[in-house]
View 1 (cartoon, rainbow, N blue to C red):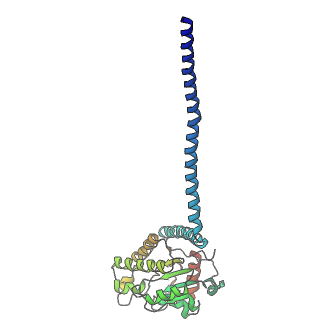
View 2 (view 1 turned 45 degrees about the vertical axis):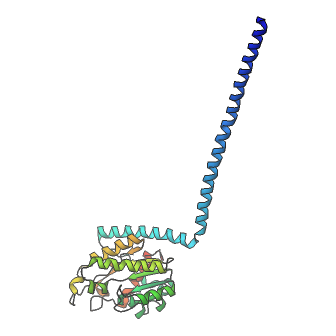
View 3 (view 1 turned 90 degrees about the horizontal axis):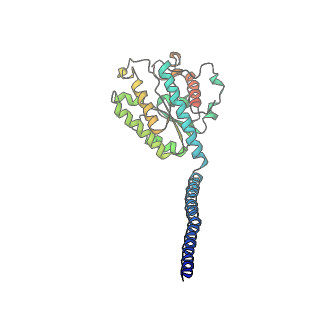
Length: 277
């Protein structure tokens, strides 16, 4: 009897042992499977996110991607040039360059210069085609509806701005008003022509102050600083071409320029916009 009971107990212990082994084996087999399933799910999610990102990139036109890259590069170069200018004074980018050797009508065929009488000289002297100049005598930033309509219809690749001199005549030292008006010009153009590259020129010095309100033109630094800050805020390239100016280029009024000046200005703008190397 004792022997039979011992066998029964041994069989019972063996069954328990085999049961535990079975559970252990199941656990070992199942655990990696769950881990692999979860890992696969995570991988699928990552791949899905990556595919979605690629789809989003594909939705962007090539010109948009290129324009964004070009804008960032030019903005960086512009900021670097302005920093150098602040340290060394205005830079003459035309020094040693034969600026007369370029065909500016062809170079600016897909560009528009917007501005006042100073910009209007580009058309007056036949330096550029009329389709590349949207400017008029006395133009100020508060009254540009006709200009917006014209430049929108032209839909240029590049827009160069020269505004501010006429605004100073009635704004005087109201710098915040000047800032607000410049911001409106930039935001309006970005809204109407989102594909266009925008470049803003700093104001050239006025050397004859014997005029009504001439004292407000004595130091244009605060206005040019505002133009620079607005450009940085809205991702627009700021062009400081004040270094090219020489007294010999001015008309007797000390504000406007002779024909000889415009090739130097166009070269500097084209260089700043990466249109020439």
